[in-house]
Image (tube, rainbow, N blue to C red; front, side):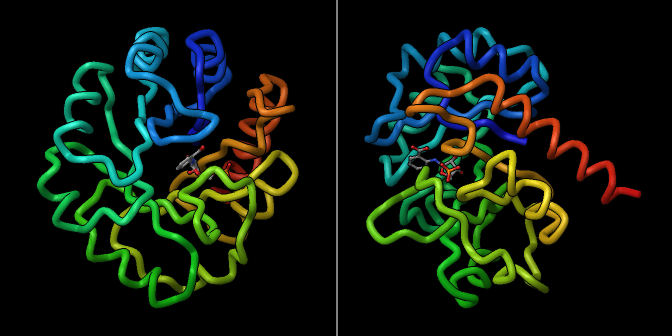
Amino acid sequence: MKICGIRDARTGEAAALAGADAIGMVFAPGRRRVTPEQAREICQAIPPLVARVGVFVDTPAAEVRQIAQFCGLDLVQLHGQESPAYCRELGLRCIKAIPARDRQTLEQANLYPVAALLVDTYVKGVAGGSGIAFNWHLLENLPLQAPLILAGGLNPANIGRAVALVRPYGVDVSSGVEVNGEKDLQLIKAFIKRAREVCAYAAG
Ligand SMILES: O=C(O)c1ccccc1N[C@@H]1O[C@H](COP(=O)(O)O)[C@@H](O)[C@H]1O
């Protein structure tokens, strides 16, 4: 599971030690944005087996590559109108975010040559981090060719139902582990604990 929108090294390290598989840092404009220097500090504080993920929205490829190298990112998560060709030519491991707008949008996700597809809530004019969940039934019987990461309005209270219904490869959370706009370690721990419980149950 991935905890996104980390803005300082201490919180990144604490989330990783609490059991997060991946830590996300947002480079797109907005209240969670970090500078490359801040992200590099976070990346250096995270234990070696935890993935460092940079979140971008329609950023020129050369800039993404430069930031990824400077910070030591393992993956980039793309939340804009990036095309399959952009992902192919980037030369980095990509997670492409797909808005859960309708079935046709979701089916076209298979055109992307990526490490994983992340399905997030569609909110007009908002690239991500909305804190709003979508109707998970939209994903029923969806033949995706890359591992599915479920995102959008997840929190400790709904993660159990979400995982039980969708059975994703992974889950991603930002707003749902915040209090007053700041990451809250107790909520992060509660989210990870609940997600692990339901995954263990689902695995039989
Ligand atoms: O978190 C952000 O501020 C953000 C900004 C721009 C693009 C993506 C962003 N975050 C990603 O959005 C989803 C859903 O987040 P939430 O849990 O609903 O708040 C998640 O994948 C974040 O990584």
